[in-house]
Length: 205
Image: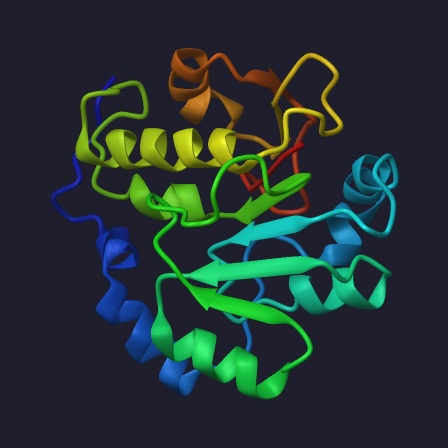
């Protein structure tokens, strides 16, 4: 069943100007879950590669996730965000960690560069104007497909997933992107609900 988006106050989340204005005032905000919440499952995957694992975080915002991963021994981490404001702020605060302004639908890293790609709620921001999560023709779903195609491109073929690229979920909304994943032949593994009802944290290895 489709739902109306006429009064959807979340529509601002797809606007880069909104994020620039917000990040200009906001120092830190943690979407959905902290590193401690997802650490056991994330580390299980990362430990299969080791401390030299090359990590990409999509839509990093001003989250502390990159810092937590760095402090936990995974220091080869690249963080991208559409907002130039937050990239400048995070670079100034944490010059030892790489932050880059980049559109997740146009990853400019070349092929097979990363062992692990993670994001928290970034794909959800693309879908705020989609009336139905099952409508793969919507602009939001097409954006998600572009992101997933880029993720598949930058993941190393010899990464953790022995059957090729793998997407894992922690959260209660696994259904939202199954259609997109099927089109890209990515394997979905549901991992149950996160600490917030309906929350989603996704990573690819």
